[in-house]
Image 1 (cartoon, rainbow, N blue to C red):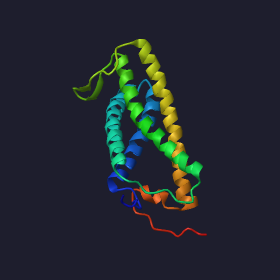
Image 2: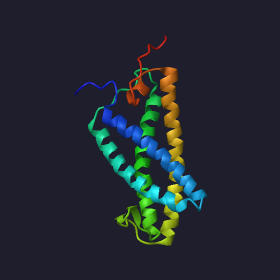
Image 3: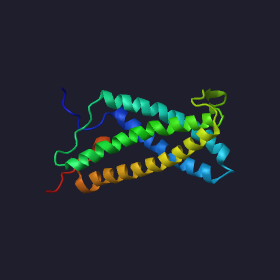
Image 4: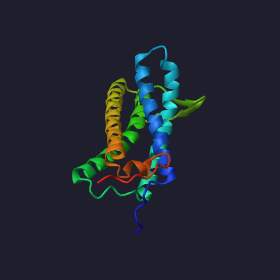
Length: 185
C-alpha cells in the first residue's frame, strides 16, 4: 500500500472549498427565503440549481474520497478525537447528500417542478402528496440546522488544529500553501 500523502490533492481541496462556499451560501439563502416573501421567488431560482449542483459535487467528492488515501491524523491525537473526526466527516457527507435529495423530494411532493435554468427541469422523485411535503419540509429544515451545527464543529476543530495544535491537519486541506511552522514543545 502506498504511503499517506502529506496533504489532500488539489482536486479534493477545490471540491472542499467550493462546496464550503456553496453550502454556506445555501444556508443563508434558505434562511432568507423562509423569512422574506418578497425575495422568495428570486432566492428559489438560486436555491434549486445550487442544490442540484451540490448534489452532483457531493457524489463526485465522495467518489474521489473513496478512491484516494487521505493524510493521516497526528499520531498523538487522542482516540476519542479520531473517532469524533471520523463521525463528523460521515455526518458531513450524509448531510451533503441528504439535504439536496430531501429538498428535491420536498419540491416534488409539493407538486412543483425543480427548475434548474430556463426550461431545464429535474423529474419528480416523490409523488405529489401534501402530507409527505409537510414531513419533508420539516426534515429539510431540521437537517439544515444539523448541517450548520456540524459545520460549526468542523470549523472549530480546523481552527484548533491550525492555531492551537499547529499539527498540519489544517495545512493538509488549506486552499493555498501555508508556511510550515515548527510546533513548540
